[in-house]
Each structure stands twice: as structure tokens, then as C-alpha cells.
Amino acid sequence: MSEAQLQQQFVLSFSQNFPHLHGRLIGTFQTSNSKRDTMVKRGLGLVPGVSDLIYFPKPDSGRLAMGLEVKVPGSYHDKDHVLRQCDWMDVCNPEEGYFCLTLIGFNSIIVSRGDFVGNYTPDQMRSLVAKSKGKNVRMPMF
View 1: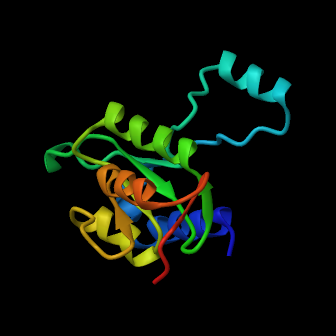
View 2: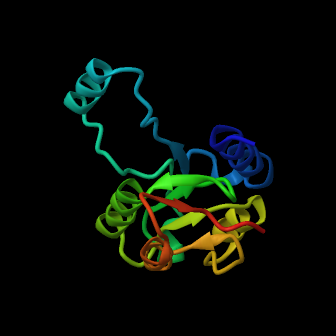
């Protein structure tokens, strides 16, 4: 499964299970096809490291916007890029933000706090990166 396919599962599940929250989950599109495309997007406000999805909980929940970074279990990612993603989550809201590796974990974020197998906070991901050898970090398997 690709990251895009996993993200599609998350978005489809959100729309089917939480229709009353329509408009509270948005996708960001960070992928560029060329250096020129990247420069144009940066000129339009693209920020490297921004999460794949941004969730805006109900105002009465006491929770602010949170970044949700989609990662496929077992996939490899450049350590520096993952650390930029951690840093962005901290800028957005240090208390909220997860690396989501499973659909069940994603749904747990919407329903509660997200403390579920398959979700990693930025600090947990930094720890995983620090323990990893080489240029890349491998996402855990479930």
C-alpha cells in the first residue's frame, strides 16, 4: 500500500464515520513534480514539513488544529525530512499532532486523544529517528 492509498482510507473513513465534522479535515499537497514546481508552490505559501492532513476539532473540545502525518508501516523515510515534520507539528500545536500508521489509530485521534498503537507523537518519532542507523528511518510494523 502506498502513502496516498493509506491517506485516502483515512479521508474516506472520516467522511463516512464523521459526516457531522465535514470540513474539519483538510489535505495538504506537498508533492512537487520539479524544482520549478517547488519554487512556484513555495511562492504561493508551501512550507516544507507541513503534515499531510490537518484536523480541526470542534471548538468545545479544547483541542486546537493538529497535524496528522501519514506513514505506511515498514516504509523508509529520510531522517531530516521526518524531523522537519516533527518540528512543524510543534510549531502548529506542541500538544497535538501525530504520525498515523493505521486506520484504527487515525480514527482514535478523531474520537479521543490518539494514544493508540500506530500513532506516534513528534517526540516519539524523534526517539525512533535517533535510534535509527543510516540516512533513513523505518516506520514500525504492526
